[in-house]
Length: 117
Image 1 (tube, rainbow, N blue to C red):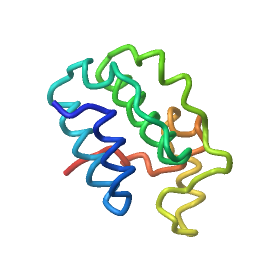
Image 2 (cartoon, one colour):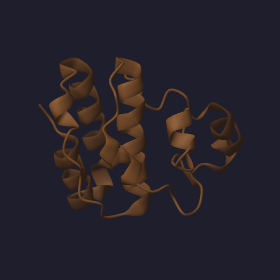
Image 3 (cartoon, rainbow, N blue to C red):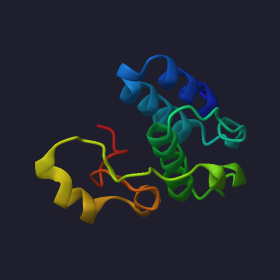
């Protein structure tokens, strides 16, 4: 079982590969559905990435019918809107498509951000 705090540490230590670490967690959590993977808060290190990981956990909880842990409420939103793709031409569509849990924290992604092939 991959935990969210282990995942956040990997992202903090190896930021270049954050999508791989995040999606490994997404896949594992969807497969295990084990609430122990999200029971322990992660160490906050960088506001944007902390918000992204928290929004991901909340979205997965919604998808799997689990109650998000209360500690997620302590993770603040981004100071400025963050368009994760970094592509100017995708900004308008991500404003429309971004799932609620991400928009709440001023994170804008495509609706299929957590989708896997």
